[in-house]
Amino acid sequence: MIFDTDIFIWAQRGNEKAAKLMEKSDERFLSVQTYMELLQCAKNKTQHKYVKDFLSSFGFTVLPLTENIGHRASIYVEEYTLSSGLRLRPGDAIIAATAVENSLILASSNLKHFKVIKELQLKSFSM
Image (cartoon, rainbow, N blue to C red; front, side, top):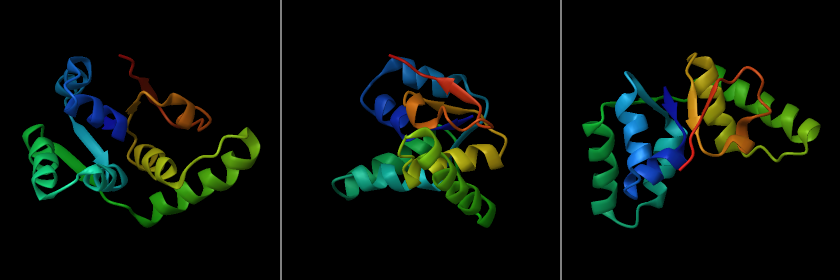
């Protein structure tokens, strides 16, 4: 399973349900986009280290941005921004494309960001 940035934020804030979702997953992935978003939210080097230690302790694998992922993400932005009226942000498009290209289910509480992408498998997370 691949996890959206929001799941990490909930887990780091102490949400047990988010942590259990991660613990139950046999394989844990995140896109390089999510990795960068998590680091961007850190306020200092100590928080950077916390993010890295958290990912390491749970056995997460960061999936790289490939040419295919970039291409698919750009198609998503082009196709779904106009047709759905939803402004699909580039970061969300990269996360979705990473999930689709790697045949992974995306866990997120922000389903409205992703529900228009037909080939994306979603797992809804709610508090």
